[in-house]
Image (cartoon, rainbow, N blue to C red; front, top):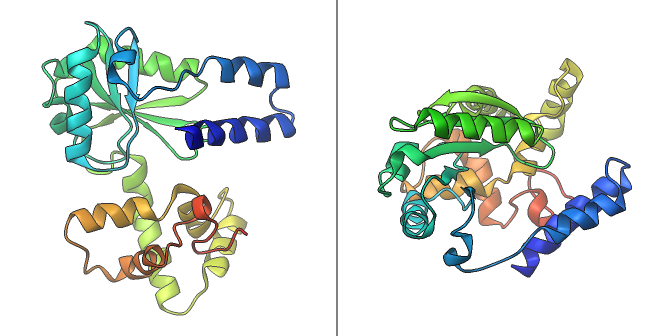
Amino acid sequence: MARGIKIIEGNYARTVTNGRLSQEEMDKRMSLIIPTEKFEDLRDGDVVIEAVYENLELKQEIFQRLDEVMKEGALLATNTSGLDVDAIAASTSRPEAVCGMHFFSPANIMRLLEVVRGDKSSPVTLGTAMALGKSLGKVSVMAGNCPGFIGNRMIAGYSRQAQLMILEGASPAQVDKVIYDFGLAMGPFAMADMVGLDLGWRARKMMGGSNDVTARIPDELCELDRCGQKNGEGYYRYK
């Protein structure tokens, strides 16, 4: 928990250094964070957003506990990037209060927010999620409940071709430069390092591994504990 608070503080500190936030505002925001390890401490919240790694059983377990403790009318949102929102909602007695709120990484910078509509998500739940996104300065987009939603489905083909190119001999830096010069904010490998290679790796391991040739390099990097910016090495070195 202390590590998490330290990361949040570091993110804010960089924003202050960049001149996008005052020290006074940073101190105010940090004072509003109350860390806890108890579900019961969340009971009076109007909105709770779950953001553990992509493991359906774990998320279902968390939503069962939230269902037990959260007050009536609370919005229960999952930050899943591609798991079945309906399967998560089914672990509660109030699926109408559940929806997806997929914040793209890094969430403190990326403006896109996918609000994922479950089969039983109520209009109030979806409207609240959309409004919350707007209040946070996000561009909220309604998405259907399907594998990868919108953003990751779009990225999948693009990333696959990038992987095939490095298997054919191109370097990650070469591919990223072409994409950057084309006009995108960053290339696929810089983006993958920023998001974390271990997200896809964990998902593939839970499904028993993958025979897809395009998963070979990112999986080998993760086996070497090169998961991206979070631990200093991925496709690139950050030390």
